[in-house]
Length: 191
Image 1 (cartoon, rainbow, N blue to C red):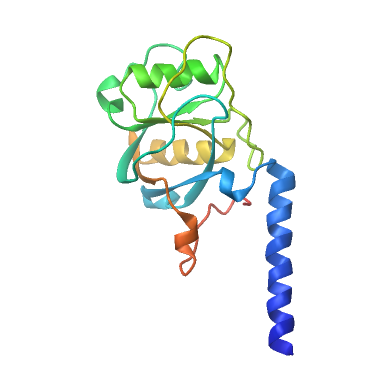
Image 2: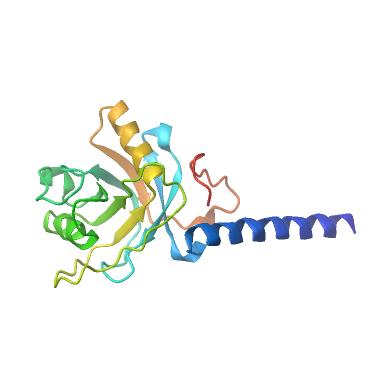
């Protein structure tokens, strides 16, 4: 009877955490995509990101080691200056200055495989925004994901601290396959 009670208690606890997450973000776990930073090690966590609602493509391949390159300029509203680093990689931009669609289009034109757009509100560690089309005729086909502001800030700070133009990531990560291992989520993020 004690074992049944503990199992039930754990079930309620997990259900409560899941419901808390849904209330905070408006998204379910199945509506997020996950990626793992492999290097630099000080940010070696599994991060969550929300796919764009009505533009961009889906990941048709899994990349075990691909670069996450900081865009130059970081807002991605102008043509990207570091095209030689961007080609064939995932690009990290910051929200603001222009539409999400425009940012994704800039990355696609520079040869990027996908774009992560971090919130410019760096205190944001739990609210995913809906990235929607801007009414223009541009429809980028690369995957576009929204990243929490605190996550984007911590990744950028780590890269600056190590004087690196990129991180090495694995994307997408199937978190259900990590059940027997620690999920290793960022300590500042609740999900």
